Amino acid sequence: MGKFNAALLVAVVLGVAAILGWKFVGNNGQANQTANQAEGAGRPLVAVTVPEKFTMQARLGEDAFNETCAACHGNNAAGTEVGPPLVHKVYEPSHHSDYAFYIAATNGVRAHHWKFGDMPPQPDVSEKDLVNIVAYVRELQRANGIY
Image 1 (cartoon, rainbow, N blue to C red):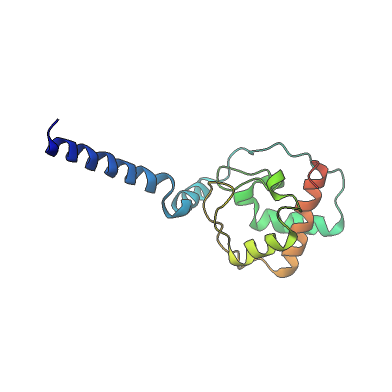
Image 2: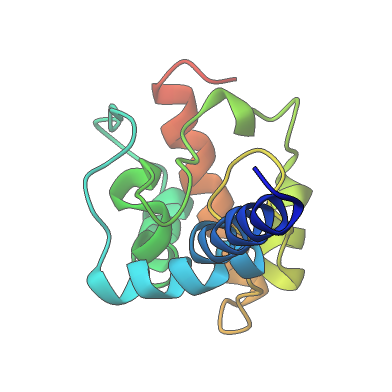
């Protein structure tokens, strides 16, 4: 193979890799995340056992979660193709404190455990709602053996 053909092949391979990289990972997944959100959340990524009873705070958190978080994180925080399951060992309190949830919702967070892309800030979620949402997620986690 001549030098020109080899250079052309390398350029084509790099170009295809760049296009595929942008399509599947580009902008840290934000473009695909937005497209997936428009299609709606799909099937849950994990099975979640829902407790028979929630505390009052967790019931309030469930309502707030369903309004603002479930579109990406799924019903009962089971995850979707758009966002990770929060009922998962990765989010156990010893690894992600309650404060980590507050920071993620308030400031957004760069993707680091999953390949869903960065989580944008959620400016419409009040501090009171965040406290209740975290209580809801923690009660779901405990019901599923995550302490």
